[in-house]
Length: 567
Image 1 (cartoon, rainbow, N blue to C red):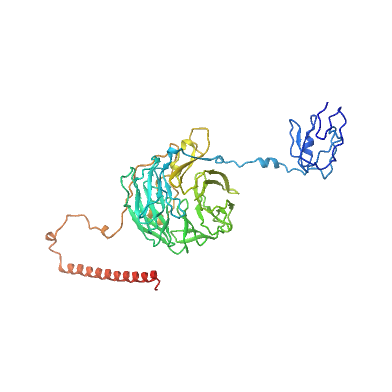
Image 2: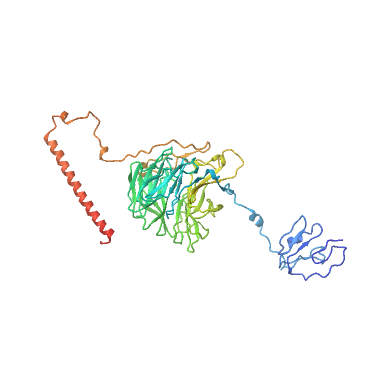
């Protein structure tokens, strides 16, 4: 009447069981039913058992596992003490519980989702220039995209609400005479955009709130100081009208856009092409990566090297670096085996990274986008079809993988919306603008929440559009944190604020305002000696100008000799 066992026996009171296999190793996987209440503890006592269930008392044997020790072949009765060799190793207290512990984070379930087709920007010819730039810049008002253009460089500026198919005759910004390599919106004026080009110039543009009817060709200021192409531009995070540019001539130049003047020139810190430049939170330090495989931290106002690291990543491919909010440095690069890597560095100990992870073996350079409010870094590789994101914390292991957004089509570039341009009612913590070959696709990163109320933990106060310093104050050595704004009621972009450029020149030294005089009404007391003094001063100025012209001509001749290779 008992239930049969796998080896053909039966429970108590049934027919005698045939001989069972020799005790020891199980020849093949099989299952064993342990009859009677209280018998299931045998499964926990046997070494090598795959598991046991208290409800149905069913145990599964693995090949090579030992069977339980019992007093009778039928499996009933008191269990005999097993030999020391069969006794399972003692369990470490709390081992099972420690395996079940998962790091708590409010960003664990962040997911990305593309917008609907009617909310994309269609029929845009994205630039095909071979330069590791994002090719896209976004702010709460506009999206700017570098596009293909014949006879020079151009980029397109679209209002965020103008989605759908873009008219082929849509006006462009076409002031450059060579391809545009980088664009960046001013953080303190949503209508001001800077562009860098292969024509060695940096131009600053005033974008109107309305859609213009013809191409924009006249910038409000042109910054000329580089002798080779300019591939990187970056606005100062806290000081008004301070713009940084980096060119193929290995120069870093800081400009005062409000006057069109050079504030600082760093010409002796880099020995090769500069790959990336980034400001820290207050704008007191710069981090740069270079083709000479050096990672440098620079104090621009003192023109000093604060720290340097040779070969932060062993590979020969370009390296990218950005500052974290707490002063650490996040880098992406390649290993000797061409595997893509990410690393986190502490300035207090710059010898070894405090975190280093290998990703994959793709060739695309990883572009890092950092959100200081949530401390999340998003990695987008050119040519990839995915966005990986990591949370940075203050405790080991510091860099925590969250998830990956994947799609089918590769990306040509990527734009990253500032925090004040997000929809807080939908718990949106990031928005990307992915560039395809012929379109721009917004991708929304969301934290799933059931409540429709404002989420204070997701949206702390974030940097707003007001600068904390003037350019002269920053240059004098003053630092300040960004001016923060609350997103509780959402952010409303301010109206168009015109950027006024005031150039300093000799015409600014005007005489005091008074009645206009003619030769017939001049003072009769005007002496002949005063007139002779003025004539003498004019002759002196003419001689100075002639001497400068001769010096310029000599320098141009020398430059021609060097260029032709005859020197």
